[in-house]
Amino acid sequence: MTTLDDNALKLYSFQVFSKLEGAVTAGMIHLGDQLGLYVALAEADTPITTHELAERTALDERWVREWAHNQAAAKLITVDEGRFGLTPEAAAVLASPEHPAYGMGMFHRLPQTMRALEDVRESFRTGIGHDYDSHGPQGAVGIERSFEPWSNANLLPVVLPAIEGLVERMRTGASVADIGCGAGSAVLLMAAAFPHSQFRGYDISQYALARAALKLEESGLHNAEFHDPREVPLPDDQTLDFITTFDCIHDMTRPSEMMKAIRRAIKPDGVWLLVDIKALDTFEENARKNPMAPLMYGISVLSCMSSALSEEGGEGLGTLGLSENKARAMTQAAGFTRFEKLPIDHAVNAFYLVQP
Ligand SMILES: C[S@@+](CC[C@H](N)C(=O)[O-])C[C@H]1O[C@@H](n2cnc3c(N)ncnc32)[C@H](O)[C@@H]1O
Image (cartoon, rainbow, N blue to C red; front, side):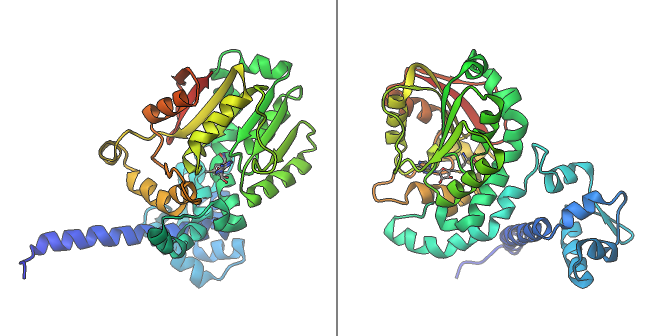
């Protein structure tokens, strides 16, 4: 039997178990969000005891105390002489849905994402994955909560003005489609801001479409609609001025076909805003330059690549599957000639302007 280096063994075991610590603490973050613990900490003017936290959340103190000890040990919340609190930065990420750095969406859907561990075992054998609806209705809410904060803060003031002439065109009256629209946040934001334009959101998730329909009804807007593209396909007569795809091309089973459909739908002088993960060309580059690469390859197995392989013959791009070079080549193959990266700062995403 090979002799093991004691120190290397201890270090490696620590490395493995620190992943489990991360996973379990992520579960505790989910609870902190769902049980209102972070909001209660944020709303307290000064740090509070677990008795006060339990009282404000109507929870049992013993359970709240053990949770707070996990969070403070993980240095996610502060502790000083038995009083727990949030730094302003922690409050932004954990308890402020209106802040662009708010991060609770991915933790909202953590149980659904982890439940996929059971489904994908079979996928490793068959090659066939599962679409977004396999994560259930709360999966769609998690996606909505993940993408809305940044979009609410940046879509209208930063992203649209970065495309020359677009805002004026939408003010006058444009036909717009958001493909892979999820719960419709981007469509509804734009539809409210540009009442002379017409908006269509397309998604294949019935849970996301149901959320979008509900939010549309609540908004009272009359210039937006939502469809499943398998029932109501995109127009194929070059009539759309502006098309957006936010974080969804890499999730599609047939992204090349979708790009061709976008080419058939868009006006000769139309604009496609392709937003996708800032992936690099090779695994080696992603692993070296992206500290979140392990998270992203894992989410790909559980969600993105699984969705992109959810039909026979799926292209299976996955979370880090659409680098800038790949996106340029694929859009060119679909008949687009202009491809330009926009100077928009985002932690995870790249923004490309694509035109016929
Ligand atoms: C990561 S979510 C992004 C949702 C939304 N764009 C947002 O930013 O909140 C990806 C979405 O793409 C949708 N999707 C996957 N394949 C699709 C297809 N072929 N056509 C339309 N939507 C698709 C999924 O159902 C899911 O809602």
